Amino acid sequence: MKKSLIVFGSFSVAFALLTGVVSCTPDNIPDDSQGGSQEQPDDSLPESPQDSLQEPQSLNLSNFEELNQGKVEINSHAGLTSRSSIVKMSSTYIEIPAKSLRVSYPNYPRVSVLKDGTYFLTYQAAVGSNNGNGHSTYYATSEDFVNWEYKGVLWKQRFVTNSLGKEDSHDFTNANHLVLSNGDLLVVSSYRSVGSYYKLDGWLDHGLIGKISKDNGQTWGEEFHLFKGPNWESHLIQLPNGDIHCYFAYPRPWISDANSGTALVISKDGGKTWEPERGEYPYFVMRSVYWSEKKNQYLASDQMPVGVLLNDSKQFAFAVEVVDSWTSSAQKHSISVVFSPEDGNWKYLPEDHTVKADCQRIDDLDGGKDGIGPAIAQFPSGETVLTYTQNANSRLMYRVGDHKARNWQKVCSSSPFPKYGGWSSETVADPHTLIMVNKCSQDGVRGIALAKFALNHDIKATKRTPVMDASNSDWAATDDALYLDAGETTNASVRSSSDSDNVYFLVEAHDKTLSKRDKVTLILSPVAPGDVVANGAMRLTLVPDGRMSISRYNSGKWSVIESTAVMKVGLGGTIDDNSDEDEGYIIELSISKDELNISDDCVGAFNASIYDAVTNKTGELEKVVYLKNL
Image: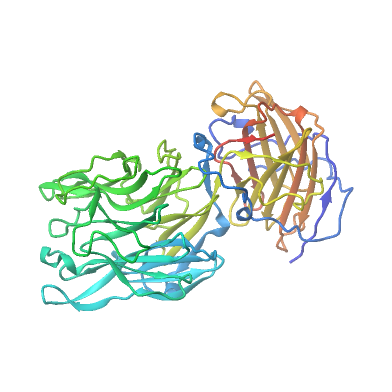
């Protein structure tokens, strides 16, 4: 690998405008103000200044997950989440092949981040390609999210004699897990007796079983039962007082396959005992009712529950799969979010499946796309994220909501995962990173797919006067950062600081193939109604070979201006030499506050993008954000 660091010195002359912008940009950015570009900078631009060339060295680029390490403020972005978005970190996407997981059809994946920072993945050995239900449940771990090690069986299929006196098997499925407040790892799995599943007399042949590890899954304690009776798809939540809730789909298979609702059992002693006691009915908490033409009767729904205890609240919000209708030709589903009472105390329902719950709910969040297998998660800053699979095409989709799991933004325009999936899930890994996991099955490939997603929202500048030396040495991991993604080989973080006179930016770009046509674009606009780019906005186009173009927006047009802005660039590699693998580049930028239209210490429509010329991909903020504390 050939690397070199070149630091270009002060650069304060506005060169010819880099034009011809084509990209996917928020609606409130004028067409000609978009941050990315798929055309190349003008080669007639003056040569890059190189008056402060340094000896070759590594840039020591920061990774996004190392940043945003400041004090976490719960619901810090409440009321501001209309400007929040998540973006897939393409370099983290991985497909774990079925062979590595030692099952033919891995399904129902769930992932957690353990107390030691490692990753813990559970999945099941599906019955077959057309039946995803499990025979046995398994787990794997990873220290780096890239290399996954098969660890073994959680619960293996057991051969038993059922309550009808027949030879049968306990099939284990739907394993799920939770890291408890004391660091212990609680894992729970459903099991069913196949031969008596549809028999009311076989009610106690099925159940929920669990065990706890105190050493991050290396060893396990004795298994215990949480519940005896039919169940599917458990989900665990620990309350601030230490109580553990286990929610699960409660089927009535002796009536119908599509007759469920959501039930609850509770542990008040860290998982040792559970109430109601085994063999008793659980607490029934969520249930909707629909008319089944196929069965000619009312049936119950609200299944596959995944929920959160909302930040700074006692209220639960649950994403559930709903059966809307069941005719002789098709079963139609949708996605809902169901809320507990504000005090968190569910109104327990009778066992009668025709009695529906009196819960607040938001229905049809899948936009009529037959959504199945939902999940919901919440960042400490407030943003909620809803994921689900479109049943018609098995594509994973997501939406971002506010701190109350309401006011949901439009669904993502396309699936973030390239292959078909199903029974997906998500978990918040840290205050700015979300993990999505999905079954992966397409083009003869079977396995489990995972990726990390970065949270972008309004940020605050740090009070600092950095040394303009194209390095990150005097910036801190506690700085607020934004994430830009232009594919597997190119991504960047953007940070800001300010003092009494200037605003500073640090862009750290990971780029394996440097080109003089690469660029970063920043747009800074005054605060304006609708968070639109307003008159007086400034656009800075920054090229890693040292060139810079600055323009001002007025009356629908951008015009090149003179500026005293200073840019320094550090290169970790060689430009336009594809024979090596580069590290990337750092851009450090200083702009006088006199040139910016700052009001109340804030820039009101800030956007950023990065363009990689070799792959012809642009990564930018999905939503403009506010840059504060200037």
